[in-house]
Amino acid sequence: MTAVLENSTDTSGSESQAGAVSSFQVTLKIRRYNPEVASEPYWEEHTVTAHGTDRVLDALHKIKWELDGSLTFRRSCAHGVCGSDAMRINGRNRLACKTLLKDINPDKPITVEAIKGLPVLKDLVVDMEPFFASYREIMPFLITSGNEPSRENIQSQADRDRFDDTTKCILCAACTSSCPVFWTDGQYFGPAAIVNAHRFIFDSRDQGGTQRLEVLNDKEGVWRCRTTFNCTEACPRGIEVTKAIQEVKRAMITRAF
Amino acid sequence: MPTAPAGTLYRGREGMWSWVAHRVTGVSIFFFLLVHVLDTSLVRVSPEAYNAVIGTYQTPIMGLGEAGLVAAIVFHAFNGLRIALVDFWSEGARYQRVMLWVVLGLLVVTMAGFLPRHLMNVFGAE
Image 1 (cartoon, helix red, strand yellow):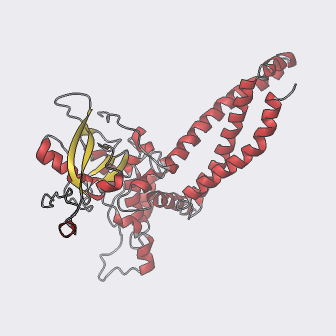
Image 2 (tube, one colour):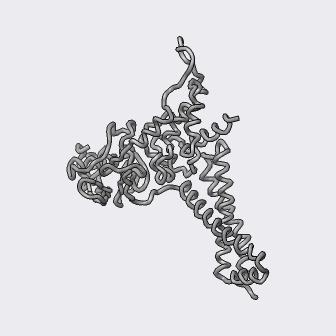
Image 3 (spheres, chains in turn yellow, brown):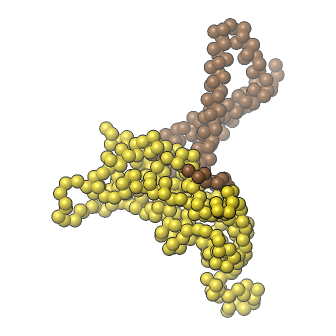
């Protein structure tokens, strides 16, 4: 990313401009927290040079690699697949690796915070364990009974399409940590766990639907959802999270009779 | 559990703010009903006591309060129907934003019918 020439002053040389990406200054206002140094979090600003193709993650890398090595955040694949770098960018949950700086108005300082509702360990890193504990509780694996199958478990295209949307989840916690109910009630299963339950409840091959619905038919289960649609808006994979939760709610009512 | 430090306000969109408004109007209506049950039950104590209390409500400030109360109830009622549709209509989640604008439109229409008459009563001639 440093290979791009910064010749933005040379506007006459159209040949060298072709294919060149314009650069600009961007300020990131990051909410830092280090419990070993201070008990309170604080805001810190860094200004870096970025290009039109840069994402928030590139700016964070530049700060960590060139300005302040103590800045701590998670990222693995850096391409929107692993779900490690969910953070609150300009007040909304986003993946830093999927958010282009030019799309979120780089003229003003861009605020970057850890996701809400989970305990912050350091800077942008939160303890994901409560999130994964809820995920494990809904039994995110195929449940079948009877003899071991001797042939393929064939599924029609229509049956596969029924739960296609919820197979896209990457467990980044952007939805769960955008939920106002989850912020105040950490016991709530949260959108991500329900999305992953939906993926199996509506899978025609799965036979554990009743068990899963039983787990979610709880005071802290699907009924906690207040349909604020923050989760749907936050999902970096475009999953219609609230719709999935509502389908689980309705399945609970219709399958009970 | 260590508490997550508070940062900026989450920038939720229409869905989140309609939920906040639904909560605020709901709690306001609850407090109104509490007072309303108390003042209405005064008629059992004595009609004079009831009249005295109701008489104190005949002020412009209470009049504006009543306008706010009606707006709160109308929003809460229409938005309640929207939430019921989000819950029970299979396409409800997809149209929640449109439905919110419909709710706000109905709120404006209802208040346009109510406010002139009401404000005439509150601020008009004796």
